[in-house]
Structure formats: C-alpha cells, structure tokens
Length: 426
Image 1 (cartoon, one colour):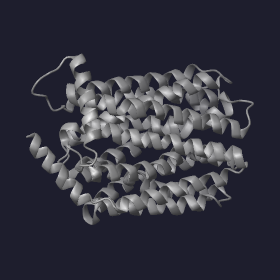
Image 2 (tube, one colour):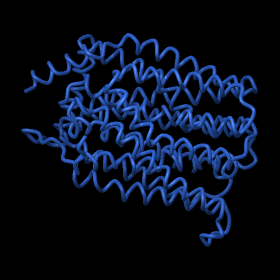
Image 3 (spheres, one colour):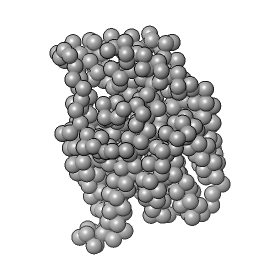
C-alpha cells in the first residue's frame, strides 16, 4: 500500500497524542497520583479518586462529542475543533508540573482537562479518516495510525522512564522531579507532532459556508435528525452497543492496570516497564491486525482480539508475580491496537461520509461513556469487597456481552447501506 504525505500526516496525530495516553494516562499519573499527590491516603481511597477522575472526564466528552461533531460537519470545522482540543490537552499536561505534593484535587482537575483534550480531539481526528482513506484501505490506514501511536508513545515513554530511573544523568534532583518533567515532555511532543495533520490534511470543503450561529442551529437539527434515523441505521446502532461494551473493558484495563498492579503489591517501576512492553509489542501487532482484517474480515479479527482479552483478564484475577504481569502486558500489546484500529475502520465504512464527525462523536461518546462505568465499577467493587481481584469480574462481563452483540452485526449490510446514503447525498 502506497503511503502518501496526506495519509502519513493524518496517522502521525496518533504518534502525537499517544504520548498522553502512555506517559500520563496509563503510566506516570496513576503512580504519581497514588504516591505523591495522594500522599497519606489509603490504597482504596486513591483508587476511588482516580476512578472518579477518569469517569468525570469521560462524562464531559459524552455530552460534548455528538453536538460538536454535528456542528463541525455543518461548518466544515473538524480541524479547528481538533486544534482546540489539542491545545487544551497540551496545556493541561504541561501544567501538571506545577502541582505540589499532597494536592490531589488540582491534579485531578488538570487530569480531567487532559482527558477532555485527548478524547475530544480524537472525535475529529477519527472523522478525518474518511478524508484520507478509501473504504477498501481503511483497515490498513487506521492500523497505521495506531501502530505509529504505539511506537511514538512508546519512544517518549521509554525516555521518560530512563529519566525517572536515572535522574542524575539528566541533571535532575530525584525521580519525582523527573516525573514532573515527563508531563512537560508530553505537552511538547503532542504539540510538535500535531503540526503535520494541521498543515497537510485537507478537510473537505462545503459548497456553502455558514456563520457560527447558523452552524450551531444546523448542527442541532442534524443531531435530532440522526436520532430519528436510528431505525434505518440498525447496523450502526447494533455496532455502537457492542463497541460500548467491549471498549469499556479495554479502556478500563488501559487506565487502571497500573493501579491494579500496585494494589496487589507489585513494584511501581516494574509496572511501568510492563506498559513499555505493551507499547513496543503493539507497534507491529496493530499493522498485523490491519492485514488480518482485510484477509479474514474486520469483525472476525475484532472478535479474536476480544477473546484474547477475555483470557488475559481471567488470568489477571489469579496472578501472583510481576513476571506474570509482564507476560500479560505482552499479550495485551498483541491485540489492543488491533481491536481499536479495526473498530474505527469498520465504523468508518458503515456511516455516511457527510456526517462523519457527528457519527464519530457518537462513537467516541459511547466509548467514553463506557470508560465512566468501568473504572468506577473497579473502584467501587474494590472498596466494597476489599479485594481488587474481584473487580475484574465486571471487565470480564463487558467483554463477553460486547462480543455477543458484535457477533450479530451485519458488516456487509452496513457497508452497502452507507454507500447508498452517500450516493443519495451526491
């Protein structure tokens, strides 16, 4: 497959914002939050606070994403919204440097702003996929984005880990200062590598430009119309329900894995290294899943990934050593990017192109609504039972139900219907 500048520029946004997903969301923030900003709090309390932060940030995206997506479709403003959310995430990440020990509430507020910037930006980044990839190439191009995300996020994460392990080599006082510097590095990385998509990816022009107020009104009308068309879009609706369920399990593992490992008594440095394993295994694995989707069918490849996730989560309930955590990190790396990238590419083929931002608003809304439930349930069950292992039963349930619903999604029917709707628009 020939990769042109436009396609590569689009994919590089994954390279850019994955720095937040790895170094902040999955890596240093949970550790630093528990050990530094929640200094003196017990394990269950800090877990509950982190779960609440993830849930509240996701709730904000839930309410904003579909409406802003509809407005962006009407105004032709996908890139403007992408830039705005990117700037929010960049500023929030960099500002974490200034939060002192014990100040868990300001840290949570900035973390929530970062989640909104990251997740909100993805709405408009994902919606631009239909502008850079023909339908028959979406599996590979979507996978390219995720693979670059794993590589780019992993490289910065590795550098930040090196800083925390050997702070004196970088002229830093201690590991705590190194972690705070890592938040600044995320902000710089995210901003710098967002430039290609802003410069070289063109947004389809609209035949008639509208004022901001007209775009808002038209966006509300479009949102209402989409809700009324839900019966006609049964395949989309069924897929979104399945996605809501299984992506809940996936996002919960991403956000709470380090916290879970620490609750079992594992060393924080060992857990961070496990995340690094996931990143570098995920880079080639995402590309392989793109090929699997093209050869055997996108839905079948997603179901394979969910099944592996189910096995790994069940195993995690009984693990005893950090070595087992490393093995599970590698297993997750094999399927995580594949499930995410193929879900995005499948969805892009069953939605109308002229409403891509709005429909990806729903896509990200349900994904983030799922992220409200998962972390909150893990924190609640941990407090209720005093046993963090039992909290994984909720994640297992979500993978099983998500796979069952996805099994009944008719991918071919959805693709044909989307093509018909696109032809009607033309």
